[in-house]
Length: 210
Image 1: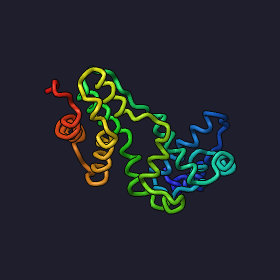
Image 2: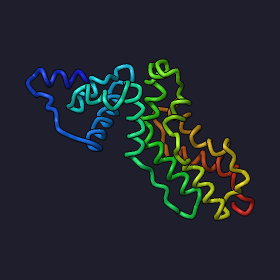
Image 3: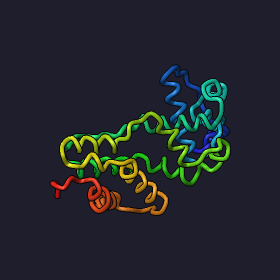
Image 4: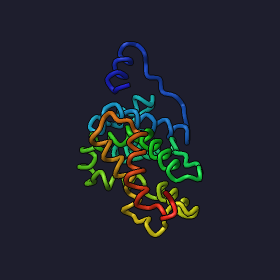
């Protein structure tokens, strides 16, 4: 629902009724509305007023929690990630684990990545930021799941712990950034399997592994 559609509904006699929510429930509703606004129109069309209309609340309610639309946008991105956690099951096979995780990451974060790459220029100018800095801020304090998977595989003897450099462990993220920026329609599982089999695992497997 866009700001325009909400406004038109209100004018047509379908009032946007404010609802009483408090605490965590209220904050969650506000952040979900903010995420929907970002998906709908990107940051250039993102306003606190628009979020308030979508969330059926008032601007002061939002302004008491976030000092600017930039802060609200960042919180909406974080809420999206935290409310859609990724599973990292122990399959006792690093290839299966990596493919499962990277495909799931792509499917969860593709909308997020597209907004970051194509619709956040105004945010970067306002905050004197960049896509790389935005990502660092967004993921600050979070443990890299790729690092966790590869280090767990090293304990099982599947990969060489001495080969797990920062550059090597950044390959999945660089791969996802590349396909997000350059390919709008892709068979994601096949692409991930090719990357894992031809690039990542050959760099880190122990000599005893095929």
